Amino acid sequence: MKDGPNIALVAALIGDTARADILSSLMDGRALTVGELARTADIGLPTASAHVSKLEDAGLVVSVRQGRNRYVRLSGADVVHTLESLMLLAERTGHRRVRTGPREPALREARTCYDHLGGARGIQLLESLVKRGLVERKGDGLSLSGVGEKFVCDFGIDPDAAGVKEGTGCVTCLDWSERKDHLAGRLGAAFLTRILSLKWARRDKSSRAVLFTANGLHEFNFLFPV
Image 1: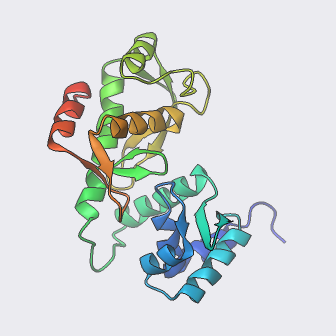
Image 2: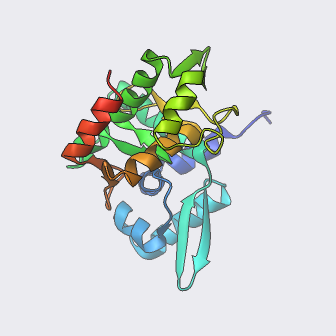
């Protein structure tokens, strides 16, 4: 028997079309009912429930019952990073769906990647912070500079609450649609929360897209120029 993690088991679970659709629909960090997941994957409720049970047994999702509903969410950000990496690989190697969905342009523009901002606007956010010296790259990692701490405070983010002085507070995530890094970690999540609280943008109710208003995009471009 080979030593080490059993990647074949995890790959087989993700490789099923219905289960891949279920996992993808949970990538914005929200919990959905099994019924909602069934509609997303275009399968019956009993089939969706069986798929969720397999994913839960493997530790990829967790579920909790609330009243008559069973709510399901991903077990952690590492599941999202794995899915994003697979999307990046599929995009690079030309393995795309025959028919792209009508929301795909919006997803490429801006979307939730678990708890932070992905897509072109997520890339813009990180590149602007780096070019202005607010965030510094140190090898494969990131750190918030002194002037960067003042900037995020002025923007309404508490650096300590965002954990920017910790290793997981300020990290990158490779974006599948842009093939560049966007800002992840607790600081990335804090930026997305603040953008939504300012009503510069809102979450699309039926996808991971983050939809900016005209004024919100103007303010975003002004504050995070590239």
